[in-house]
Image (cartoon, rainbow, N blue to C red; front, side):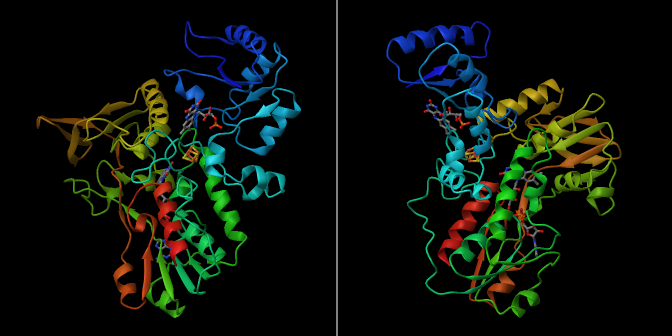
Length: 432
Ligand SMILES: Cc1cc2nc3c(=O)[nH]c(=O)nc-3n(C[C@H](O)[C@H](O)[C@H](O)COP(=O)(O)OP(=O)(O)OC[C@H]3O[C@@H](n4cnc5c(N)ncnc54)[C@H](O)[C@@H]3O)c2cc1C
Ligand SMILES: Cc1cc2nc3c(=O)[nH]c(=O)nc-3n(C[C@H](O)[C@H](O)[C@H](O)COP(=O)(O)O)c2cc1C
Ligand code: SF4
């Protein structure tokens, strides 16, 4: 079988017409099948499509090649559901479907689809985070949504030796994942969540441009949780006495994190970040409450969320500036999504100032300093703080004094991302 680049998506590169000729020669030379691929090293996003590419983005190439040869043609590229795969085959656009990342996210996808367990498929969210390039720090190639990926030899889902009563505090992704796995192992589980729905911060993750498909993770976790006997208690902030009242053998602290609020003079003029002049908002507030931010918006922090927020807020009549203390933005994002979002920020004329720190916020003005300590000022209608989070683990020590087994998981241990949260949850759930 030949994996043939059928369009390089670059001026002067291979086009579908060129590839049709190559396909004919390949078939006459004895190839058994052709897999219709695309892109080259400068257009990698075509080869490994991310959030901004549509599902089945290369199918037209497969069908184009299929028109000119008689050997089987394989379609690939963000074929993200069994339904789409079926449709491509039934419409005669390809003879076979190839799937890469969706099988990293859920190696049992084909079995689940065949057995009618469609809802149990853990879909790839096409984030290109933990599976790509050097993978996840400390783990290598892994997967953001599948905590077992790359660790199958270490993590075993076996029945618990002793059935215990668990209280899980916090129904974000880490708490949900812990609840699902520990319940599957036979433990009795109660899950407290202070909000009216499960998902934690990740409920906000689908709002930036092209990120709608990350919703899939919470759909999956909610579905899997419904299949268990976990008792979910929503709208309940668990305090120490509430947890103790349940007489648990084990407490898992999955309380997530709080936004990091830096000590910038002026930012808390009125004692609250959202009331100072210009108004200063922490990032989650912007997503949750959509405050009126005015026309000139300064985002402090050029990490993933800061840049995605700029992408979300930028429009013709708004001037967005990202201030980043490091030498470049998006340092932890992998190359394909990084280049994708940077190209949109360039198109939207978002100004990025690196090697720059904010030193004071005053009425209508943000004072900044470059690495040579030169100060200057920027006018702003509002400022958004996106400089990471700090673990919310205030219940940890009090709990340890009352309960012999207490495990923090997810961002309650260390702020990170969905991959780090789910892996830490799975590790604890399989050890209890
Ligand atoms: C805007 C935004 C976009 C993001 N996008 C991405 C992304 O694209 N990819 C990615 O990998 N990560 C992303 N993240 C980060 C990701 O959402 C977090 O890493 C992940 O949600 C951490 O999971 P967690 O369960 O540890 O904590 P959280 O999601 O913070 O969940 C903690 C939960 O505990 C609850 N809780 C706290 N205290 C109590 C208590 N005493 N009683 C009951 N409940 C309590 C909270 O209400 C919350 O629901 C994003 C975050 C934000 C804010
Ligand atoms: C982490 C990773 C590594 C890959 N390595 C290769 C490779 O070595 N050779 C190759 O032909 N394709 C490679 N690919 C591309 C995939 O084979 C596939 O063409 C691409 O991911 C699109 O399919 P998908 O949307 O089902 O993931 C890789 C993809 C990923 C995500
Ligand atoms: S890390 Fe992201 S893109 Fe890669 S397989 Fe997992 S969900 Fe899909």
